[in-house]
Image 1 (cartoon, rainbow, N blue to C red):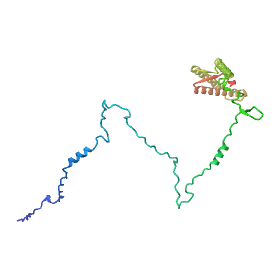
Image 2 (cartoon, rainbow, N blue to C red):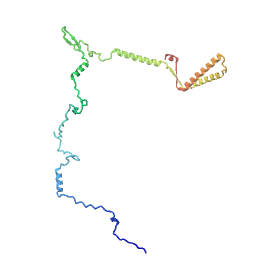
Image 3 (cartoon, helix red, strand yellow):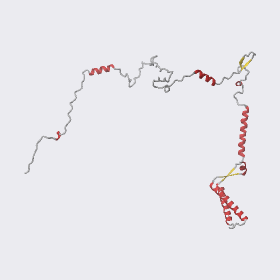
Image 4 (cartoon, helix red, strand yellow):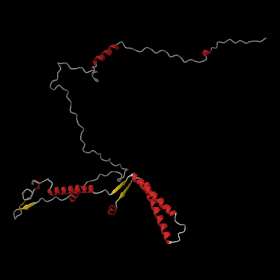
Length: 264
C-alpha cells in the first residue's frame, strides 16, 4: 500500500505578485459662486477690437464724408542726434601697461601741412595786361579788344578747307588702288582635281620611262660618260619621286608666275 500525503493550504497564484496601492480620488475643484459675475464684469470693461482691429473694416456711412482737418495726424519723430566724432577715443592706459603698447594720438601740425601744399601747388598764370601810360597804368588785355577772340569768327568750330581737300585726295587714291587691284591678273592659279590627277599620271609615266632607262644601263660603269648618265638618271628619278609625293600629300595646289615670284 502507498501512502499519499495531501497538504491543504490557502496559497493562490494571483496573490504572489504585489499590486501597487490604488491612488485616492482627487477632491473636486473649487468653484466660486461669483465666478460668472466676475467674468461678465471683466468682459464689460474691455474695449472690442482695441489691439488687432476689426476682422472686416466697416464702410463709412454717407453722412460721414471727409471734412477739412479730419484726417489722421502724425507726430514728427525726433531724428537721431548727429555725432561729429564717429570713432571712440582710446582707453586710458593701465599702470601695468607700457607706453609703447597704448595708442598715441598723432598731433597734426597744420602750419607745416599748409606750407607743403603751397610749395607743391602749381603757380598761377599771370593774366595778360597792357600799360597805356608811362607811369604804369595796367589794364586787362582780354577785355580791351586788342587781343583776337577766335570764338567771334565765322569759321570758328568748322573744319578747315585744306583738311577737306586732303580727305578728297585720300578717297581718290583709295579708289584708284581698288581699280588697279581689280585690273591686275591674279598672282596664282588654282589647279583643279582633274588637272591634278592628269599631272600625277604624267609624272608616274615619266618615272616609269626613266626607271626602264636606268635598269637598261650596263652593269659596269668604267667610263666617264656612263657615270655621268647614271648620275643624271638618278637625280631625275629622285626629283620625280619628290614631285609625286608633294602632289599626293597636298590636295589643293596653286601655281605662281615667275614674275610675281621675283617681285616677292
